Image (cartoon, rainbow, N blue to C red):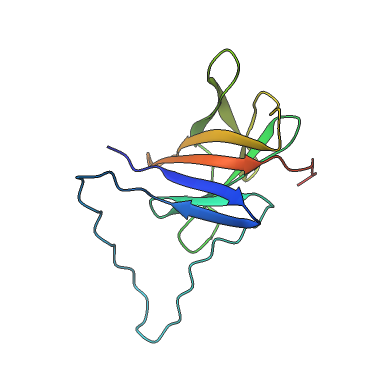
Length: 151
């Protein structure tokens, strides 16, 4: 069973969580080659004006515009951008007739899709990405609908 990260925006703060289902053992922490005297700060600050969440050791930053343009940036644990060429993915949003899933396409260093325009100021969006090495990422976002940008 996959864990799902959830990112929400409320009261100006973005939070991310990876829930562990009752009765399932928590995942063991992974070691990283960090010197003992190094100061480690885990950075979830948005780089592109979106909401940030984690799937495993990867960060996804998603931004949704009023016209339905969804942009997704992928980065590693330390927020170094990861290449998206060769990646495949989809975005799923609720609609009156039922969930709508659209493919994410590669555009430069981002993944993009046009989803049905959200009716309000927040939108539920499930983002699934499979990187070219086969790593699968899944995040359920509650995204603020941001003004259009030319990023």
